[in-house]
Figure (tube, rainbow over the protein chains, first blue to last red):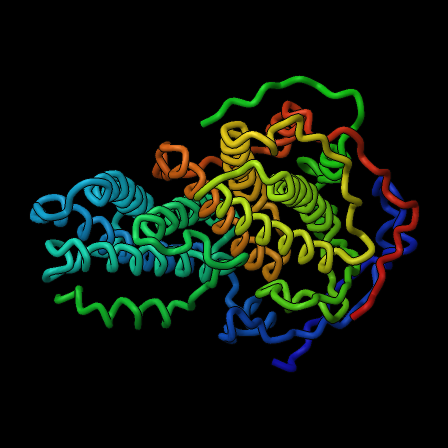
Length: 214
Length: 231
C-alpha cells in the first residue's frame, strides 16, 4: 500500500488554454501515493493494485464469465421461483417476474457475447428459498446486493468499452436491489456510496449459499 | 419515464461550461497523455474517493471535465432535495425519500468538490419553479433527475481515464440507480423498466437539464486555475 506510482502531470497553474503542442513542455513527473481504499471499513486494495491488473480481451472474457455465473444463478432462481413458488404472491411475484426476465436477458446477452467461451450453466438447488416467500425475499435481496457489488468490483479490470456495457447491467442490478429492499421494509439506498466486492469475496458469498450443486 | 421539455435558457449553464471542456473525438487522445494535479481534503465518508483525496492526485483534463459535469448534476440534485425538505410540503414515504436522498446528494457534492479541489466548478443558481413545494411535482421531477443521473454516469463511465476515479464513480452510479428505483416505486412506476439502463451523451444530458430551466445562472469560474493542494 505504500507503493508509489509515477505519472505525468501538467503543471496546472501554467496549463495553456485550448490545447496545442506547447502543452507537452509543461509535462512534469509527479509521485502519487497509493492509499488504501476503504469502503465501509473494508480495505479493498490500493491504487497500484487497481492499476496492476491490466485490462485485456482475455481478462474481459474471464470477468464476463464470472458475471455470467451470477446471471445464471439469478435467472434460474427467479425462473424456478415463478414456476414452483405458488406461495410467492402479490408484489413479490411481480418482482420475480420482472427481475427474472431481466436476468435471463443479461444471461443470454453474456452468452452471446462470449460465444464458445461462455461457461456452462451449473446445476442449482435453491431448496425452500424458491417456495417460502420470506426466504425468497431475503435471498433475492442478498443476490441482488452481491450482483451490484460484484459488478462494481470488476469495473476497472474491464477494458473501457466493455465496462461501458457492463455498467448498464450494474445499474439495473442496483434498481433490483433497491426495489426488493423497499418490499422488505429496508432502506432502498442505505448509503451514499455502494460497496464493491472483490471476485473472491463474491465467490465466497455465492459458495456460502450452497445453491451451486454441480 | 417522465419527459423533459427542451426549452432553451438564455444563460450558459454551468453544465454547458463543464461540457465544453470535455474533449471530443480525436482530440481526446491528446488529452489522455496529459493530466493536471488535483487535490483536496476529504472530510469523511468518501469511500473510494477517500483514496483520491488527502494527497495530491494526478487526473487527466478529461477526467476533470467529467468530474465537473458530475458535480454540476449533483449540485442540482442536492439543491433540489434540500429545498424540498425545507419547504415541508412532502408527506409519508416521499418525505423520507427526500431526506435520505438529500443527504446522499450532499455527500456526493462534498466528495466531488474535495476530489476536484481548486478545479471544482461553482454551484449554479437554481430556480425549481414550484417542483419542491408540491408532492406530485416533486415526485415526477425526482424521478426524472435520478433517471437522468444514472444515464449521465453511464454515458461518461467509459470515458474516465483514471481507474481510481472510475471505481469511485461506479459506487455513485449504483446509488443513483437505487434512488431512481425507489422514487419510481413510490410513484407506482416500474422500479426497473428495462434490462439495460441507457447511457446518455453529455449533449443529451445538457439538453435535458436545460429543458428543466432549473439552472437560472451559472456563476462564472474564478480565473485562477491553480488547484489548492490542501492534502
